[in-house]
Image (cartoon, rainbow, N blue to C red):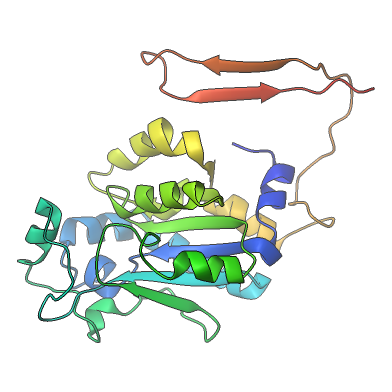
Amino acid sequence: MPSKGQLAAQLDPATTVLLTVECQQGVVGPGSALPELAEEVRSSGTLHRVARLVAAAHEAGVQVLHAVAERRPDGRGANNNARLFRAAGRLPVQQHSGTTAVRIAAPIEVADEDLVVRRLHGLSPIAGTDVDALLRNLGCRTLVVTGVSANVAIPNAVFDAVNLGYTAVVPSDAIAGVPADYTPALIRNTLALVATITTTDDVLGCWLGRGRAGACPGDQTRTGPRTNAVRLEVRSAAQCSAFRLVIRVQPL
């Protein structure tokens, strides 16, 4: 976990965009094509926390971007090169363009200033879409990734964001996948290596309760001796498949 000061610097409203991934009625709503995922995202409180983040972003002046996955009724242009796509094409609820299935699900509120990017192909809400160009035009440096699913679209979004040069921030309690225990394993063993892992409450604290300029509430200036040792520790797979970087700076 980053310090509150580090997190505040990353979450500067002027250079941050909040991304919601596939938080649409046909995926996380009551009539979802994926009822197990919908149940998990609702019973865990994930969808409610995404809605809180969106509301806070609106209040703090953070740009919100909703990524929606959909397909034409005739399937034209859609992928058919993996089991996932073929299975999706047979589901009783289809994410057809223009239907209620591809509307953002309650309780998330879409403001007039929000951007909605719809894709007809692929696994990622970023690759092959307008998202990267929009982020650059917005002056984005940090992308906060929320939504579903931790199985496919969320890791795709994080990897794409990092590859494109953005800092990815993932509130660990604002993403979900199935089974439920897969999400924390993904975060611990994969996303923590490339993204800043935080919580919804910490993000809300930075956006809504900022104390002194550029800092989250509760952040304290650290004083006292510090060493100039730089230690990169690679723990064994048996312990944890994660990298830990500890940096201390000796005052001049």
